[in-house]
Every structure is written in structure tokens, then in C-alpha cells.
Length: 270
Ligand code: SF4
Ligand code: SF4
Image (cartoon, rainbow, N blue to C red; front, side, top):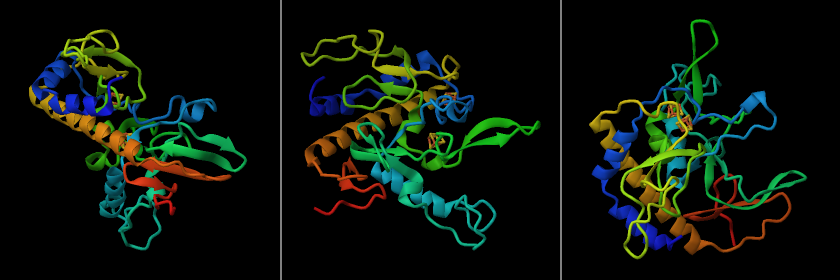
């Protein structure tokens, strides 16, 4: 992989129109199947994998505020009916959990150092903001994001990602790609994405291949570029600010672009 700075320059140079062309050629319309918001196998399988989606610190804070701003009709709208008639912001832990990668299982739970945050999951391993509308039969209906307007960049751009080093890849496997070939450091085109074709990757999603309007493709492409730039800026900030922390037994430390934090989002005092 090239340096993160090189990849950031490439991300900043991405041509939105070319990304939109690629998205249009692949095609996409969300069917609200919920697969990108749920655990793999979830409650049905003890060995299933929890949902994992990166959420950056400012995105966590926006989701916290969303808890206070929602109105579910009970006057509280935290998603928890405590009947006090007041809206409350989500706690940091309600929104985010330490990214599980790199943590080890200790006697009292996970421990160690990790990088960045993942969206909080529920008991089934699904994103805690995912809900299924009741169908007429009383069984699960179409999926719904309860924080749609405030969802993180990775959710806004699913099922797409860009094939640049240092950017994050969503849970689903990459199954297709399109658009300009991935550039090499020497200025030639490497054709280096998953199937040797384009810089826009498409991940597992039943909505792929459906017609998408030019306006929607352009909006997605704009957000995809914003996400790539943002992910690389975050990665550079984490790398530059990283100093190891002795976590001790049962301790978890999360390094994000703002420094080292406890699982409740508070800074680690050094
Ligand atoms: S997997 Fe695709 S179709 Fe299903 S909810 Fe996610 S984006 Fe929509
Ligand atoms: S925040 Fe919304 S879109 Fe993102 S994983 Fe959760 S339910 Fe899905």
C-alpha cells in the first residue's frame, strides 16, 4: 500500500462524475432488506458475527444528539419509555462500542487497545438503530434505520466503497467493481481493485443491479468521496497521535483521531 498521505491525495482527486458513472453502471436501489444493518446469523446462531460498522467521534456525537431530538410521541423519545416527558441525549456507550478487532477475551470481558469505534449492537448483534416495521402478519417487515438522517458515512454509502488503501471496507464481501482503474504510485493505472477493474467497489447487497437515477448516483458518489477523504484523514490522525497505553486487566482503550479514550468516550488521563 502507498502511504496514507498518497492515498489521501488520490481520494481528494477522485472525480465525482466518474464515480457516479461507475455507480450508475453497477446499479443500485435499496430494498430495505436490512442485511447491512444486522448481524450475520444473529440470534439464530450463537456463532454468528455481530454487525460491525465504523463510526467516527463526531458521528457518535451527532447520533447522541439525535437521541435528544427524536420525537416518538411519548414526550421522551430516547427509545426508552421512562415516562418523564423529557428528551435525553444518548450516552456515548448507547451509540458506540470499541472496535472489537485487536481486543482479547479477559476474565471480565474484552481487554486491550483498539482503534476506532463501531456502532453499538443489540443482544442479537444487530445495529441498535435498526428496526423492522411490523407486517400485516405480525412478523418482521421492511427494515428501517431509526437515525436515518444522522447515520454515519459508511451507512450513507453502502453498498459501495473505493479501492484506495487506508479506507475501510464494509462488512459485506466485495462482489463487483467499476470505474477508472486504481492508480499506481508511478502514475500508471494498476487495475488493482478486487477484480482488476475499477475504483468503485460494490459489496454484497440484494439491491445491486437495479436502476438508479443520475441525481441519486451523483449524490452517492459525492458522499463516497467525502467518506474516502474522511477515513484517510482519520487514519492519519490516529497514526500520528498514537501512543501505547498500558490498559491493565479488564481495561479497554480506544485510539481515535482525538486521542486515547475509555469505552465511555472519556479521554485517558496520562
Ligand atoms: S443490503 Fe442493500 S438492499 Fe439491503 S438494506 Fe442494505 S443497502 Fe438496502
Ligand atoms: S445506523 Fe442505520 S443504516 Fe447504519 S447500520 Fe444502523 S440501522 Fe443500519
